[in-house]
Length: 231
Image (cartoon, rainbow, N blue to C red):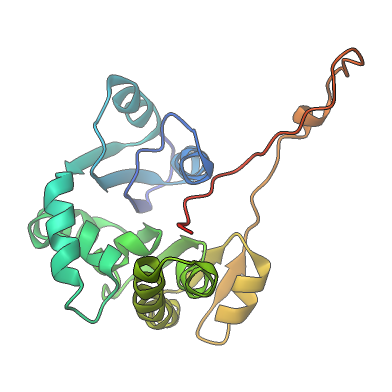
């Protein structure tokens, strides 16, 4: 798809199409940009269903791609086992030794590795080659704050335990990867003491600010975003 001989491997845990939601929209644009500059292979390790639309998008915007569907029940089982480990539970949810073995060849052949979110870092964190981490948000910080706000004892315990694990894991990974990309400048500054970080804010299509105002309508309020934290 380009004239570059550099091979880039991008690891995702959600399909980048359709670009609905912040993380999918970012992955969608990341795939498009990388495919113009590198010989791009995308590997998606997910519990989502692969659709024809996703296949079409990946076929048109990558040199090649592979998908591995990890059944949700198996993910939940591994997450339960992860409770008794020291690493974050969501690492156990998405990590698979058998999948890791299958993608070893692709990792070996790549010149550049990009891990999306904390969920994929275990697949490449110990590779001795250029590797970058698209962390997006520091989930550990979010969980620690959520533990202070929630009124549920269950979620308070879960957020506290997982938050502490994630903080330690995130700090370690920032030190291992060549660069870690954050969408939040404050988080990028905090983690910069553990390694190299770069603040890459999410952009907004300026055309969205050009519209006609209907003066006949009553005042309405809209919320744009996503809130999955339990309270």
